[in-house]
Length: 171
Image (tube, rainbow, N blue to C red; front, top):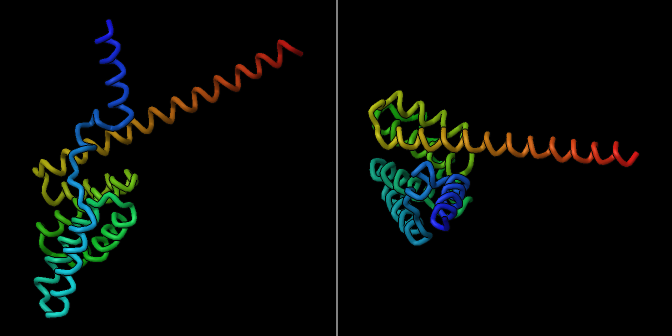
């Protein structure tokens, strides 16, 4: 009996935390040391006026930022990628940038924009397993948020109805 109750509580906990999607904990996270290293590499590439290396360093830094633990870093990474998406003609680079944008938006809680980016990413490369997995996680999160929203609304209606019924009885 205790094992069954534990399983139910575990499932509810997984649902609320997002672990049920199987994706929430799979993002690699970067700490400030990795980000600092990427920033130094970028500064060196810019100083050397090496355009190819600069672009590579910007991608590495963007990747590190959207995988940071800090919301400000994630936003900075998203801004860097947004500024460079328009300039790429390479399908592979475009797919990478759209995927990173989707990750950044997902980690920022902007699931609608994340979904838009991942759908564009899948238009470029429909067979990308990584993008398909993220799309499922985004959709699961949107559904979960909708279910929680409906639950809150139903609870609020129930509370108001209970107060109204109590008021009518006492009056």
